[in-house]
Image (cartoon, rainbow, N blue to C red; front, top):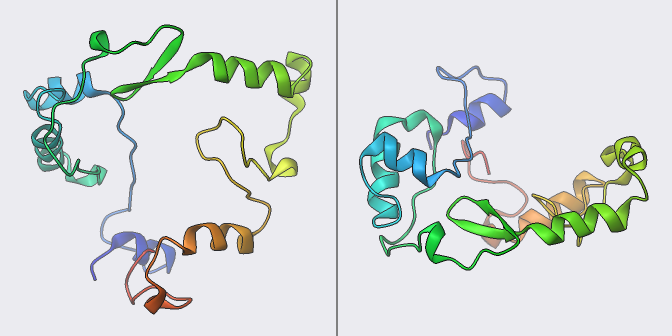
Length: 154
């Protein structure tokens, strides 16, 4: 398996530094590829992958059109990629978790650790490697046991 992330994790110094990029701007993808992301998300992303293979972008499974921002009912929401998220939820979390901005700024995510149920980018309990392992392990084949195949970054 040729996975430069594995080489990085193992300290083997890959030829190219492994990189992961989150891409969430369909308008930029359309501009860069010349393919309308909303009309052809798979074709657009394939072209973007061809142009910038180092980004390691995910490819939609289908080319089914996606609704354009102006076609979505997005009142009170914030844009994230090609969809909208409930902006009020984020504001509510700030107001309900912290009594003041000062308290919010003093907050230590390292001391907290458990973000299960939070409205955050990644929800979950991060208090120990064992807890994190248990959460992610279920997504991989049981036949792997406690180790991914040789050369896999999984």
